Image (tube, rainbow, N blue to C red; front, side, top):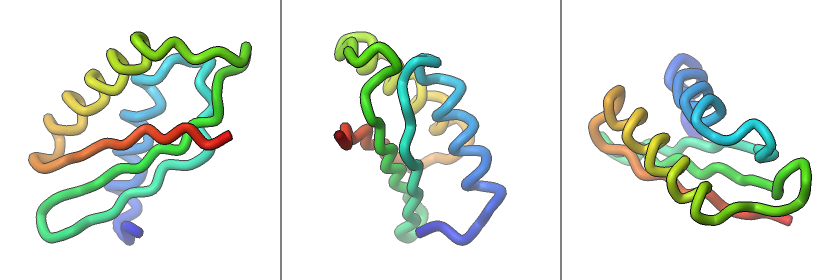
Amino acid sequence: MLQNKQVQQKVEHIVRTNLADDILVKSCVIYKTGMAYRVKVLINGTVNGDINLKGLAQQKQKIVTALRHKFAFMNLDLVYDA
């Protein structure tokens, strides 16, 4: 787990601002290995219960693009956790 609180806050902000408002984020965990970061975001459905997979894929791409502007080596996993 990442120790740098500033990086944690920046990453969480990017994730939350680029996901749809109705997606419930349970946690956002960041791991650093060498120069690379891996972000694992646990989501728990949406407020209305249905997840639009196409929309979620587009949101994921927006998040990855935004993260890579700040951090060169970044991987993102969105994990559904019921």
